[in-house]
Length: 168
Image 1 (cartoon, rainbow, N blue to C red):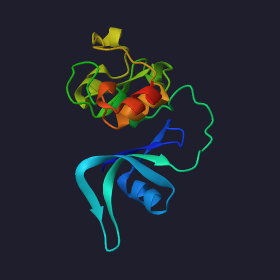
Image 2 (image 1 turned 180 degrees about the vertical axis):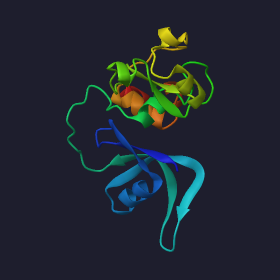
Image 3 (image 1 turned 90 degrees about the vertical axis):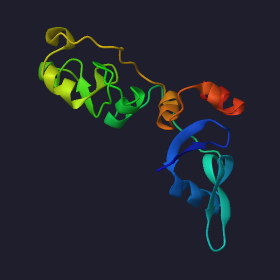
Image 4 (image 1 turned 135 degrees about the vertical axis):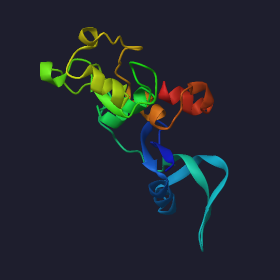
């Protein structure tokens, strides 16, 4: 399902929503389409609108300041682009660098994407104990980076200029 970026009335990124939710917001006049997928349209008996890629809310929504994106398994997989941190193949699981059995926590800096085979082979050991060095170190994405990764945007230069500036 396509993800649609939701911008506040001030053009700051807020979140991503499903295509269905984006269309409902547009039809209720709560949002306008800022950017659409070229050549794709949503058609119904009484509507014909472009498939939204980016929508902007008509009214400003006050959001509490968040310094870090909230941790989630899905977020770790997206952050690591579904690539195993040990071998580089397609990842389907999340591995704890310091295993939970040794006191490791669910956090951005302690989890990496991993293929099931390497996750099983590493077991309840650290990468050093298992002799499995990390190809890249885990990091904490900003909320804006997390949203862009969720949309599949790898390079900010692919974004419109007005959006690239607000996501920085």
